[in-house]
Image 1: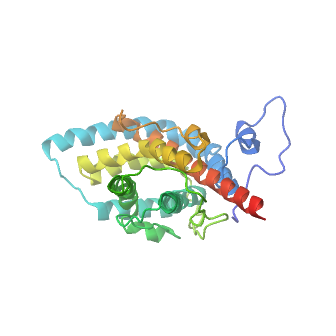
Image 2: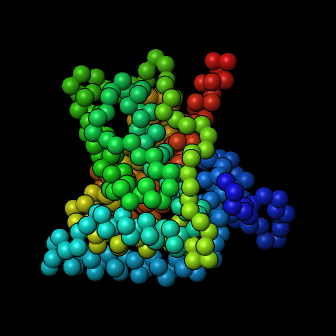
Length: 294
């Protein structure tokens, strides 16, 4: 990555230690280094300190307003195409390159994790679409909606095929890590203009009511509940690896007890973190396999 970092070569102030520096130096989670830098730079930004406290309550209020409008006009303004155009425009002109980098990474990570599970389950999945956006322009092709649909379709098709073959998910004789990229993805997060100041968490909170407005009530509910499927995916990975560590790393809990949509913004942040951690853990396992086979 080419943009400036703020965590390298810092002198530790023992009377006022930087909490974000502490988290950056901490290696307890298997996070991709550039992703951690990008995430913590956003947390340490003026945008998150000043903008987020105003955006979050306003966003929740707008979700309630949209819910009330749906009672009167259920499908009013529903348009996935317009939604993705607005997301693209906002990310391009107002959101930081760090945040855009993490958003673009997320879709590639999701694709690779699902492919890893399918490869090692011995099941060919045909109902999902591979998402590998390299720039913000690629997001306009219904990428956010397809990402939500992929996870549901994957779980349904995987379990239907396992059931049809009268078997359960279990560890293969030899793990296949071909789906997991051990390195940087080809991503162009856009330019750093003076208007690109919004951090990731503020952007997510601001976009959540927009998501609610331009999707049907059913689509919005399904999308927000998909965030809790992180635990389901972690269970699959733990079974394949015969290692409970993957399950212990996730924070979004099982959707059999669904949370209300007002918490969607925070849960989306957890979802992004869970995906990064699971992908990082699989990357570690891939490196261990290479080392042992050398």
